[in-house]
Amino acid sequence: MTAARAAVAALQGALAAENSAVYGYGVAGAHLAGARRAAAVRNWVAHQNARDALTGLLAARGAQPQEAAAAYELPFAVHNAAAAVALAAVLEDRLCAAYLGLVGLPDPGLRAFGARAARTAALRAAAWRGSTLAFPGLDVPAPRPPGQARQGSGSPGPSGRPHGSPTPPHPG
Amino acid sequence: MARDATRRAVLAAAAAAVPLAATGCKGIAALGSPPKPAPDVAVASAALAVERQLIAYYGAVLGAMPALAPTLRPLLAQHHDHLSRLRARLIVPPGGQPLPTPRATAPGRAPVPGSPAAALGYLRDAEDAAATALLAHLAAAPPSLAQLLASISASEATHALVLGTAARHR
Image 1 (cartoon, rainbow over the protein chains, first blue to last red):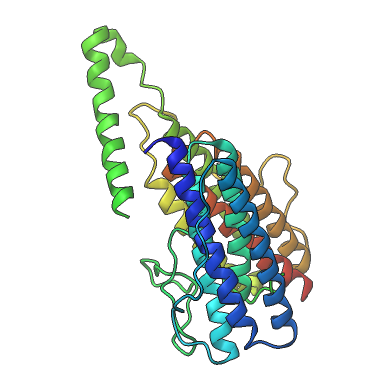
Image 2 (cartoon, rainbow over the protein chains, first blue to last red):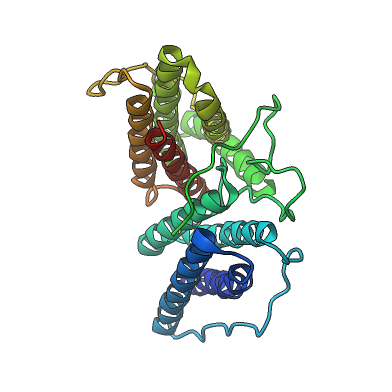
């Protein structure tokens, strides 16, 4: 694959993740209240802006930006606040992974852009999850509906060390 | 993971091949000078030094304030994960430079502050600095190492968030 085609493919991957985040935050926000609802709304707007920025980057490369789907299949049923929070963390994990796709490109500008966006997604994921990951975007935990054992890392250490960390504030 | 394994295999093969090629082309004198480290090795070494330094800071703070262990241990465990993953990228050529030894206090870095809130702030600043330092190597790194550096840098940004929050609650 040429560098230009690889860049378009990675940008389309990030756009697809942003489109699903816009949809997912719409679902999550409906089940949240107070500060968490406000955070979900802020993130929803931020993801719309990020989607528009990616659309612009693709158009500038002469590529047709991928359309958003009318609806997306959720990784688990979202009928309450706990599931909504878990969904928001999953959406950000996936965004982080998609933006690391840009970091794998040769273009230093896209690398830096991808790294900044991956960092933002990791910060939002940590805030929703209430714990940190060792390798956000690389070792992405499997989507887990709330109620199952929650743990900070998708790959427990060899010594069975506890992962995760105290609860950071809500994202925004 | 499969990609990592392949990459390591390729690196191992490259490291093994270089001295043989040098022997073949330049005669016995070439054996005296070790091959220059590949860009992967230089970048991974720099990132390892950043991680070792952070781990030393955590050690210094934990030594002075064991009560902070519940907050710090999970974060420190993730730094050890970073160290292992970076070390897996590193193949030091025979006769190459040994890795820098970590010190509890780096040159120009103040000693651990006296209060828990200040100590948490001290680690938060160190995490922020490490997150930035790793990104400085982004352009020089091969693609998969660049992704690893960006992921570790993002992890450190989340650590800084946790530490800043913990500092405010003290």
